Length: 331
Image (tube, rainbow, N blue to C red; front, side, top):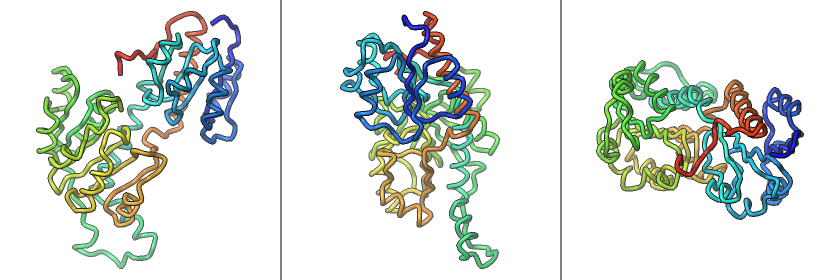
């Protein structure tokens, strides 16, 4: 990189142990307010930094990359996905891109399973009734949810998180089905008792619960389109802890409003941080469970992410290929 102590600009506040370690190793500049940087602030940062450490909510697109200074040689994303970065434009400028894969698998799988339980058993709605005084005592017919054991779970994307979810779901007595770009190995299928569907449409027709666990790429934008969502039966629920853009949110909302689906659990949204007023209304009526993109939000996970960023930056500084380098062919 040509500098013993590169200027590393971090766009959001990180856990204190991560920031402390960065201060020891680099000339690190942090966003003390933790407010998302404006486009102008990002442009200033990318023009000055030797290494930029953005987060998944920072849009590092081609026009912004064009403002990068000649000294910028690494964008070390603090996040598993890189759909916020124009990787091709970065590489064209000679800028390496890295991410932080693998460290959020268990946390996200926990939250996904939690949403499946919460929606099926109306946990958020029940908690609200206990708090607001509307509960009048036990009743045989009040707040009835749906049994999980014996239901069919369709996992869209059988990578690390999809497999971790399958292990949890199997313990809950769900039968495991999945659709993936590539079929996983026979040993993994056997371990998970998982049935592969080459056709996503065919899988959706048969599922009681569908969980979205694939990355957001141009190929997966609105993968669960209005047409595909119509394949689900009216008792099905949809859970998404991946990216909001993978589901046609308007189509999903219309189906929930028309009682063409039993419910949904969403941790991500198509236009976040904005949440559709219609989804908010459905949530108030107990039809959906909404979370503020917190599927990977554990202290341990965030520290692990920071450590991966540090390793990628330090390895690159030392003249070696960083372990989590991202290439367009991987997307």
